[in-house]
Amino acid sequence: MGEFSLELNEDQIQIKKWVHDFAENVVRPAAEEWDEREEFPWPIVEEAAQNGLYSFDFMAQALMGDESGLTLPIALEELFWGDAGIGLSIFGSGLAAAGIAGNGTPEQVMEWVPQCYGTPEKIQLGAFCVSEPDAGSDVSSLRTRAVYDEAKDEWVLNGTKAWITNGGIADVHVVVAAVDPELKGRGQASFIVPPNTPGLSQGQKYKKHGIRASHTSEVVLEDVRLPGSCLLGGKEKLDEKLAKAREAMNNPKVSSGKQPAMATFEATRPAVAAMAVGIARAAYEYSLDYAQERVAFGKPIIMNQAIAFMLADMATRIDASRLLVHRAAWLSRNGTFQNAEGSMSKLHAGRTAVWVTERAIQILGGYGYTREYPVERWHRDAKIMDIFEGTEQIQQLVIGRAISGQRIE
Ligand SMILES: Cc1cc2nc3c(=O)[nH]c(=O)nc-3n(C[C@H](O)[C@H](O)[C@H](O)COP(=O)(O)OP(=O)(O)OC[C@H]3O[C@@H](n4cnc5c(N)ncnc54)[C@H](O)[C@@H]3O)c2cc1C
Image (tube, rainbow, N blue to C red; front, side, top):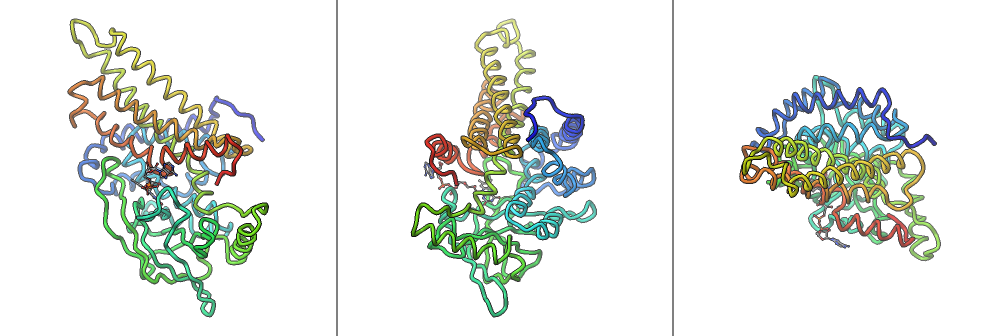
């Protein structure tokens, strides 16, 4: 186990600068246009692929080549400081990659994670499909069914997934489905749906409040047939897990193993919290500059304690969020979570992003409320941080269970 340190190593300092430069020079100047167009920003993601930021290699370095766990949150904070909609378009495939890495065999990881990115010449996308119209927070109630056809060693998937980032435009869809619905969350498994598989199609594309450059759609699965090799983790492991879960149903003292979707969420929550810190920091820095320049009643508005105190609280909450994120990210690599620290980081950072961006509008006054200034966009973008990868209330639920000694799922 390494030591927790707030000091970044040489590699992390370089990565932070590299991602910041890309965010400042490429992402931020494009942010307004893609928010207005409400379309996936292909040229920007292509540029990110050309400079290596959108790539399997970078994700592998950030996820596997970093013992401290801090490289990914550091990079995400900078990227989302640039823009959250474009940031998610660049990072969205990472959710699918995390789903594969969390549940797949080493061979499946090596085969499918690179395909979530493609090459700089031909980029590909990944999508992680869990949520459904009737099952968002309650992921144990998934209706999408996976039925095994033993004669052909094939799985047949049917169902509809809702609010899927990159849904339908992705090349690789990772789909979580119920194999044994009676077992609820413990009867689920994750599947790879390879590119161009018949039966998978895009449903409605959602029009959103914020992160509008990121593509969010329904994914419809109609008799999607997959070879046995597309079951993440393999059949033997699934059978063992189902047997254990059935035993646990009859005997609560037996541990029933973890749910595949929940395993992925545990690993990704500090990353989402880092995105929230990036948005909040963008709004804080912008409003700090503005408060020093804007003159009202003959003096810069920051000379009013009311404004200075707002900025003081913004800075404090952002730093507190970052510390929670770095602790959670470090713990995810170095030991285990004790009190749902991943959920704590997301709860605090999500709320901070919403609060800070709202205060930023306040500091900019009428200008802040218009689309001429970016703070209203940052406020719209921030709200998703309280919703996806577990809502604010779900984080509280998980933390509540952890501090009262109940099982965290
Ligand atoms: C832009 C966007 C992108 C997304 N990307 C993806 C993706 O790539 N993949 C994916 O699988 N999903 C994705 N989602 C789905 C997202 O994870 C869900 O929307 C989220 O988990 C909430 O589920 P829900 O919308 O069904 O809300 P519900 O579960 O219906 O919740 C509604 C409200 O009830 C509260 N609530 C529910 N249960 C409880 C409880 N037990 N106690 C207290 N309060 C409760 C919630 O906190 C919330 O306030 C995305 C969503 C959006 C909007």
